[in-house]
Image (cartoon, rainbow, N blue to C red; front, side):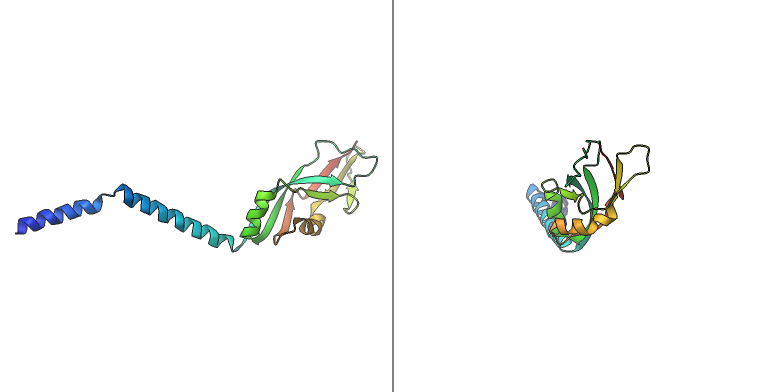
Length: 151
C-alpha cells in the first residue's frame, strides 16, 4: 500500500511542476488585466510630463517674412491629470499653439544681423494655458528663448 501512495504522490508532484497551455493562457490574461487596471489607476493621478508641440505664428508685422529655419516646435512641461495628458499627447499634432505677434513682447537681438528678434517663452505661459483648453497647466517651455530671423 505504501508503494501505491508513493507512485500516486510522485505523479501529483510531477503534475504540479508542469504548466499546460490553458494555465499559461489564464496567467497571461490576468497579467494583462492587472496591467490595464494599473494603467487606468495611474491615469487618474496628477502627472508631470513633456510634450513636443507644434507652433504657428500669427499677426506677423507687414514687412516681416519669417524663414523656415525658425522654430516650428517647442517642448511643453505639463502638469495635470493623466487622462488629460494622454488626450493632449494624442491631439498635439492636430492643434498647434499660436504665437500672436500682436500680443507677445518680442525684442531685437543684439546680433550683427538687423532681422534677428527673440521671444522669452516664460512670458508665453499664460497665453498658452488658455490655448490648451485642458485641465493641464504649462509649467515651463523649452527652449527658454525663441530666436526669430526675418527677411
